[in-house]
Amino acid sequence: MKLGLILAAFFLALVWIPFLWLSWYNVPIGMHEWDWMTNEAGQLPHSWWDQQHYIYTGVMGRYTSNALLSLTSFWCTLQAFPVFFFCWHLVWILILLIAIKSIASAYSWQKCFLLLMGIQTLYIFYLEDVYDSLFRYVGVLTYQLGFLLMLLSGIFFIRAESNKGIRILNFILGFLFLGLSIGANEMNMLYGVLGTCVIWIFKRFISGSNSKVYCAALLYSIFCALIVILAPGNTVRLQSEHGGMNVLNLLITTFGSSAYLWFDWLSNGMLIWVSLLAIPVLWMKGEMNFGFSLFNDYRLWLILLLLIVPLSMGLLMYSTGGDTFPERIIDHLFIHVLFLWLGLLISLSRKFHLPEVASQLGKNKIVQFGFFILLLVTSLHVFGDGISVDRSDKSNHRKYLSLIQSNSNITNAWLTLWKGDAQTYHQESLYQLSLLRQCHADTCYIDAPSILPKMLYDPLSDRRNRRGDPFIGYYFNPEIKFVKYQTIRGSGN
Image 1 (cartoon, rainbow, N blue to C red):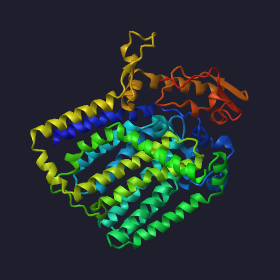
Image 2: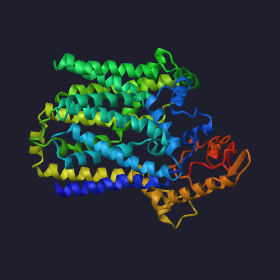
Image 3: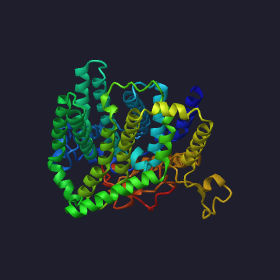
Image 4: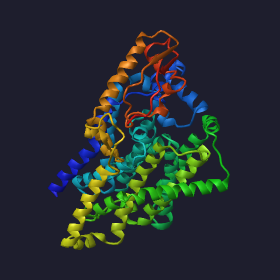
């Protein structure tokens, strides 16, 4: 077990450390980072409370994320920006580990760490857009924040059900984080209502246990959702996004996109492989004495897992008029799916007494050998997915490492660091931005960095590629109205 834990820790380090490292090279791009750093070039109301009223009535109803983003100008500088992301990645891992320990309370911290390794590996491996989900400031404080708040709410509800600590205080904190999570983004608003509704129905009509608290939680989540939905700013936003769709088209696009996502997640094989590898961790004999009764029935988790994808896609398709579904939203959905998948695995192990089955199978030499082969194949797939050589790059034909390409987010993160792309991008970005202090024109032109690593840069988020960014210059000199690139570049590596 100790050897396995050491190997798992080493594997997690290989998966996670490059993204933690990349945090130090992250630079604000524009949409919407400089907006919040400069309070939209001083155009937003000076009072924090007035800002909330302005956003709620004229922009959108996300009360939690907007309240936090409105504090950006008080603390965020070019120097503090990468520190924030470094600390955020640490907090992310810590809360995930605590949540796993709360779900699987009978497991040791070491086994919870193994589960954390599997979830974090799958999450990063399946990321549709690394920058959008991990290094885009507004995306992090909207979507990842919403997920962490949802986890914290679940942690305190589980603690209350398990009679750990002061029960009433745990419920109060559970309600608090539930409300904050719903106010982070519209997807979390949906998940809060869906989760409390399914749990209340399960407690009330299936398990026959006391459901008053969860009835109150359902009503509370609906109330918080109405605060978001009824915001006058949402009407403005829906019109700007050209939202709305007739019922038939909504059903077709919803179920079509849901089928596509499940096919994408399952056909890759990684989700199934890692689930099989988790068997020795999940299903150990004598360690299934959970205090939280919701893990005694797999149907709750299965229902939530089946509903969360089509309901999410239905909301997204309607709000955008079926135009698109951004990668950050799919990544946000997937991390919720991962935790529901984990809950389903645990509850199935209880339903079908799999500890005994796993214990018997584990003694078979063929099974042990097959498990090792599966572990090896999965590890190779994590780092070697789609690996190839770029033969079209004639300038680096003797620099073999520079020619390596891969579909693996983890491998690409390491390559971005190894090649020095992240370091070059960071240094050149800061130098070009520093030149704005010497500019006194309405529109200032700067050179784009010679390297724009995909892990840390998205051309669509950089308004300097188009008519110019109206907020960057204000940070260095209030006289500057727009900042543009002299030469437009692509997304780089």
